[in-house]
Amino acid sequence: MRPEQPGLITCLIHDSGGRFYASKGYIQKRRRPRNYQDCKTHNFLSFSNTDQMLEYLAVLGLELTAAQFKVGSSNSLVAWEMVKQGFGIASMSVDVVRASPDLEVLLPDSDPVMFPTWLVTHRELHTSRRIRLVFDLLAVELPKLMA
Image (cartoon, rainbow, N blue to C red; front, side, top):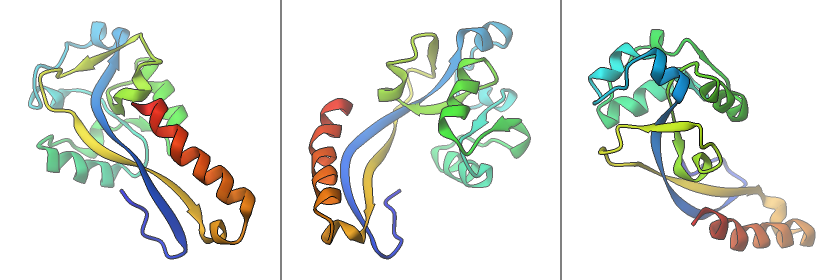
């Protein structure tokens, strides 16, 4: 989501596609879901507020319950490591998964979930040449890495 807090300056740097992933170990222990209906019997990991995540997934047509989110972390690196260790299923940008070859995409025939990636800074961008330089450099270089 685009940050809407006053005083923040944003720049859209990439429209990313995301899919659902699980470790090979998780898939071996549990059967591979073939559709959203099958997902109702699986464990998922939350990267933040589980209630928010449930609302977002419901819009996509994936009706889950809070009980299916047995573990998670507000630290995305920790949550992603839990996915790699086989604790459950999570959605992730295809850009990130390129560095995780031990994970498998689930529901590959479904459309990817599209979401924007924003570069965000505070209003001191207008008063600090150093912040402006770094922001402008990131705005140019990050999209190249995500393409």
